[in-house]
Image 1 (cartoon, rainbow, N blue to C red):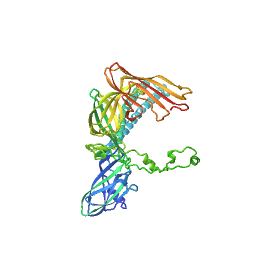
Image 2 (tube, rainbow, N blue to C red; image 1 turned 90 degrees about the vertical axis):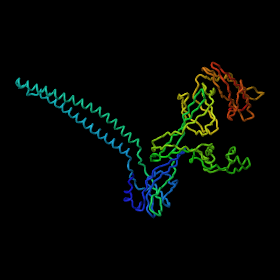
Image 3 (cartoon, rainbow, N blue to C red; image 1 turned 60 degrees about the horizontal axis):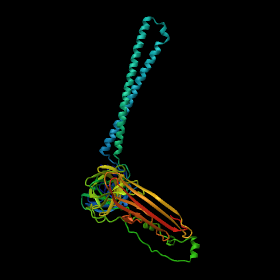
Image 4 (cartoon, one colour; image 1 turned 90 degrees about the horizontal axis):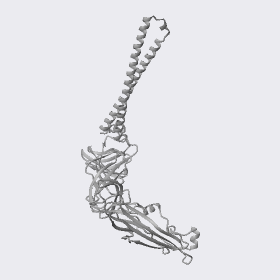
Length: 546
């Protein structure tokens, strides 16, 4: 519990006797790809009359303009928000933080005691060394020469015994010091771990905002306060584990999401939902403004512009806000039916409470598993690659939207790499690659290339090229192959382009991309498939081919 009564006494001008301090807790969070909506709740006791509910636990960076208040058990009045000049809060530390601080303090005390004990042992060793030095001086003093034999014998015995005792004491002190230093390292290591454990608890010590909610109660009773507001410092992103069985073509998509927040407070045991709504993106359709065209005398235009007039120069100037609207990102595609589809977006509700520390945790939650069938084939792009790649072509018949996100890829149970998937609506087709096929070797070689002037009579230039493409199967199995290459295209009548291929491609202008060709064929083990591609370009003399 937070100790708020002290604030009532220290700041009577801010919080009066009729005010009711309220401690709220984050209960529900809905995260978007960028940002989120937070719901806080609290119970309070109220007497008959007018009161202000004082909330001091909102993070200071809360978007107070987005705060919406609901009250049960009383009539809601005005709501006052303040981010500056907020009375201090006395945050009571959690039991975990208090225990961690106590452990750090105990180990720091043990460390101080251990250092003091080592110093005492070192002093004992120094004292033994001083005794040895004194005894050595005593045995070599000037008075020794005048001693009789008996006295000299007794002195020699005493010096020997005392020296031995002093050396033994020094040796034992050194052994104790070494043992104490070894124990000291253990204490230091334990202390560092305790400090790390304390730091990992992420104490909430950030500044807070103030919210005063006016209420009117007809009778004494219990009420409930609900605060809803938006935050920018939170997000979630999809992540997938895609597992392909090569022989059957079965694809398992394990869906998850990474969630994170940096609001300045920890969320403990909240009900978490993930929405595909993007409130931070464009919410209004773009506008089209009138486009006025006019003509002027050519000489006058040249004097004004000192150059050619372009469509851009002739278009009336428009504001920066209009430019941003023209360049705004297109609206997200319509999302097809889903169990949590509300007509605009998909919402995933996580069934268990989630705890998320501010600025520290990146928590992965599981969103379930999808299965589908795919067509496995080899994708060959000899223009850029030296091997073909294994690809699973699929139509999204899972009934659920596949959102853009990071993908961890597994082939027959083995991890093969990571990638990224684009948005795949229900019913849409997509290809997912699962790494190179080292035994399908690709070669693309320009066999003949001629470029030059064809003479004064034709007054034209030309370029001809012959390309040989090879796919060699060094594996022990047959592969269906889809090979992609390209020929140039033009939109100018003066540039003539002719091309031939043997065999001819199965598809031209793949996916609407002009000049992109695709061949589809099966290749057996040990077989080599050859494709020849010839092209000729011709353009007028004085022009440069680009």
